[in-house]
Amino acid sequence: MLLQLAAVTLAILLVLAYVALIIFSPKPPTPTPSESTYLTTSSPTKAQQLPELVSTPATVELSVVVPAYNERKRLGIMLNEAVDYLEGLDLEDQSSGKLRALPRGVERGSYEVLIVDDGSKDGTAQVALELAKELEEKWKKDGRRLRGEIRVVTLVRNRGKGGSVKHGVLHSAGHRILFVDADGASHFPDLALLQTEMDELEGSSSKTDSTEEWKGAHGVIVGSRAHMVKTEAVVKRSFLRNLLMRLFHTYLYILGIRTIRDTQCGFKLHSRPSAAHIYPHMHSPSWIFDCELLLLAGLSGIPTREVGIQWHEVDGSKVDLVKDSVKMAIDLLVIRGNYWMGRWSKPGWVGPKGPGMLASGLNGAARRLSSGKKEGKDE
Image 1 (cartoon, rainbow, N blue to C red):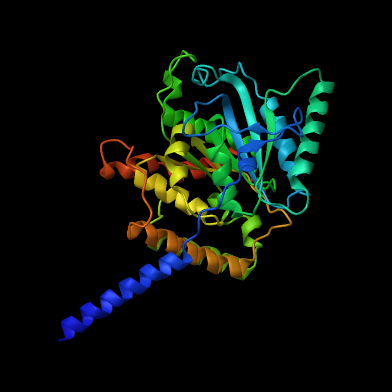
Image 2 (image 1 turned 120 degrees about the vertical axis):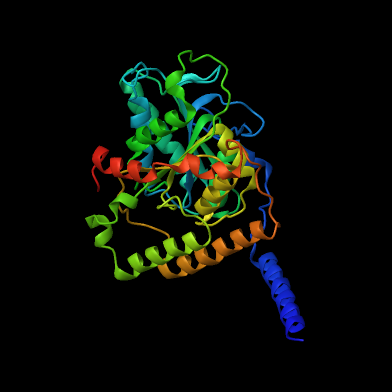
C-alpha cells in the first residue's frame, strides 16, 4: 500500500514538474524580415541581407557580436577599443612560429562588428552608425581604410541578452566568433589570449598553408574573472553580492556545470563549427544563456577552456542583484529540466571517441587562469 502511494505521489510530482516546465520555459521569438538585415555607414538606409551561420561559409576572419540594449552612453568606449585593437594588429607577425591558418577566401585581418540592438528605446542603433562613421573618419585621416565593417542589426522586440547574442551569432560571417558585452568592462586586447588558446585547440601551429581547406575544428574559449576573486575589484563588492556569487557557483556545480569557474563573463570566443553546432539548439533569452552554452558544449564533447582576462566594473549595469539572481536560478533549473526530460533536443556528439572523453577538452583551466594573472593587470 505504501509503495503504491509513493508511486502515485511520484507520478503526480513528475506531471506537475512537466507542467511547470511548459509554463516557465521561454517561448521562441517571432522573427520579422527586417531582423535578418543590417545597416552600415555605406548603406545607412538600404538594408542588406545577413548571412546564415549554418548554411554559409566564413567570409571574414573574425565576427564580434555585441548585444546592446539602451547602450548609447556606453557603446562608444567598447567600440573604439575593439576597432583600435583589430586595426592595429600586425598581420605579418610570426612570433608564434606560423601564421594562423584560414579557410580559402578569408582575408587575414578581416572582421565584422555586429551590433545587435535589442529593441532599444534610446536610439542605440543610430548612435552605433554614428560611432562607426567617426571611426572610419579617424582611420581615414591616418591614410587607411578599415579592414573590417561595423554592421547594425535592429530587433523589433526585446529578446533579452541571450536572445540577441543568439541572433547575432546565427548571422555571423566570421571564421571565429567572439561575443562581448557592450559596456567595455572586458579588456578587448585580451582577445589575443583567447585566440592563442583557440590556436592550440585547432592545431594551427602545425599548419603552414593558410589557403588549405579548413576541416572545422571545435572549441569554445571563455574569458574569465575567476583569478580576480581576491583582488580589490571583488573584495570591495558588497557582502550580499559576494554571497550570491558563491551560492550561484554552488548551484551551478549541483546542476552539472563544474569545469568553468566564471560562466557569466561577457567575453567568449567560438570556432565557427562549434557555434553552428550549439547555437541552433539554444533557448534561453536571459542572462543565464552562458550556462546553457557551456552545458551544450559539454554535452557535445566540444573542448572548452577558461582564460583569465583583465576586467573592471562599469557603471550603468541593468542587473537587479536580488531579482535577477532569483530569476537566473529558476531559468537554469528550467534549462536543466528541459534537457533532462527530453523536451529540448541536444546537439549531437562531436568530441573524440565518445562521452567518456568529455573532460579531455577541459584540462588546464586552472593553469590558464593562473597565467592570466601574469599576462594582464587586474583592474
